[in-house]
Amino acid sequence: MTRAVELFDQGFNCAQSVFAAFAPNFGLDESVALKVAAAFGGGMSRCGSVCGAVSGALMVLGLSMNRVDKDAREQLYAMAKNFVDRFKTQHGSILCTDLLGCDISTEEGLKKAREENRFKALCPEYVKRATQILQEMLRL
Image (cartoon, rainbow, N blue to C red; front, side, top):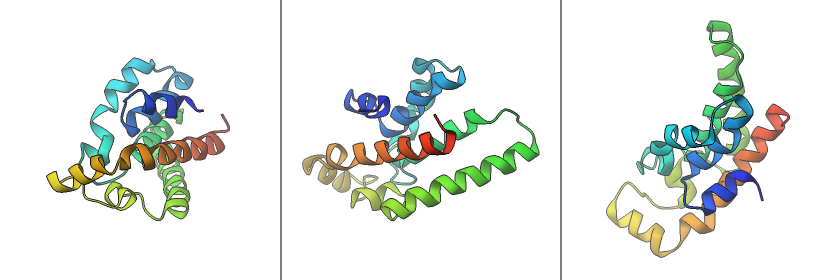
């Protein structure tokens, strides 16, 4: 089991789990990473937008950059697009609402996701896949 899945199983959200699992590789303390990514779960604070596992992965890609200039930003955008394309090919979307099959930005959708155990049934796979793609891309 990957560290990211372990963190998710401990109750951290998908963004926290992916970001914090990789953060120490880039000199960022895991506890700080958990704080930074806390609002990104559930597709941006349960708005159902971009999956938190994807958001966390994009943050990791940002940490992987050695520079913070325009050329580095363009390289990062290309890497991020590659990540998104790979994740989307595997799962059909990067949107939390699509991946969960319900809109957790509404009370009804959140209730349905919880009652049907969708977070525990589906999200570990998204966390795991995001982690695998990152490992392949960063050769970690």
